[in-house]
Image 1 (cartoon, rainbow, N blue to C red):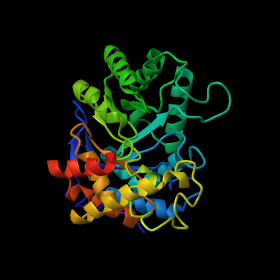
Image 2 (cartoon, rainbow, N blue to C red):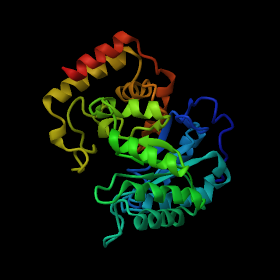
Image 3 (cartoon, rainbow, N blue to C red):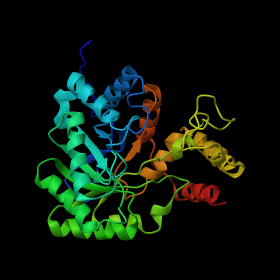
Length: 330
């Protein structure tokens, strides 16, 4: 059956300006980290991506190593672009990243010019694209000069292979240095993608203020703490949950008794707000003025629809924020 995008796709999504740039991003972006690789259900992932676009989610976030296996999420993105979404390419923001292990040998990871630009070429080939909208350095390289890594990002823009560049997993000092280098090269740093959620708030110490001061957008990943900030674990560990699957990213010892107490208290307050816990956790991040968008994952269309519904209730009173802080910091 032919795909026809919803004519109302831009009516119910909120769009935010990314830092000082001319780019607007949807408040909710879809990440293809899990559930979109070669081992997943292709029809299901296609249904999720098409539904996301129909809901006004115009930003799809990938990386060279997303799968499993690594690279397969980009291949699936190519197939969906060629069969359904290709006609809407200019409506889409497609991002990818380079930094983690992709191939054997000394040039298969980190931040050398050799690796970064070779990885981008591979990503473009896998996705069947001439360019990506945002290209990230996925992590800082302790053994490569930052000037080299940022120079590679600058070259990607100069070569027409990326429209914008960003960084991910950089601390505040590294971020400020990266911004300065890119600014001097004439390629602004558009955006930073840090790990940020109610349980991991390191960005609040310095990073958010750096991004605000320098006019750089922020798009947190792992906003639901790998599923802890949902109703999945309120009554134990379901057999089909990420913890039960022995994921290296979420393990049983992460669900300690004190964490479960906090999750239950947060869930109770979310219910009072008329939201799910996941919706409240996403809204809490989006209430930060420095945050442009938040990257969510999805394992079903229903989950996507529920979490995208976050945008209809984003406001918190001061008392609410203080109450939530009291739960989290107790």
